[in-house]
Image (cartoon, rainbow, N blue to C red; front, side, top):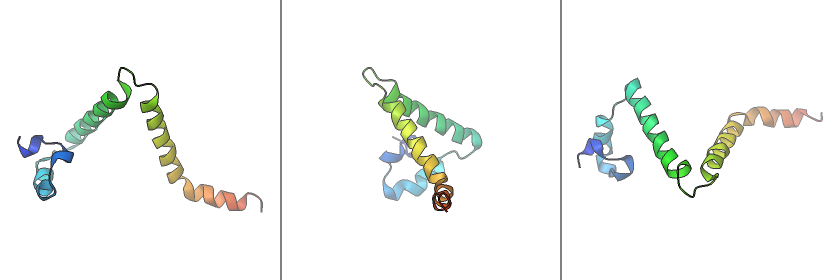
Length: 84
């Protein structure tokens, strides 16, 4: 199909600059991209017939790792000050 309708994983490396030029980087376009990504994630991991809690636990584990990464410097300094 046309280059603008392809997904990122279907675009070849040489076609990447042309594909990026066709993307909509306005706030409304970015919001639409986020909504499309969320619905894709939801359909793949959460809204499945025999899915179980795997999708939500994956999302929570990612959030925990991300928040630990954001607070790592503070946690590291607190560890050294804790017993001294």
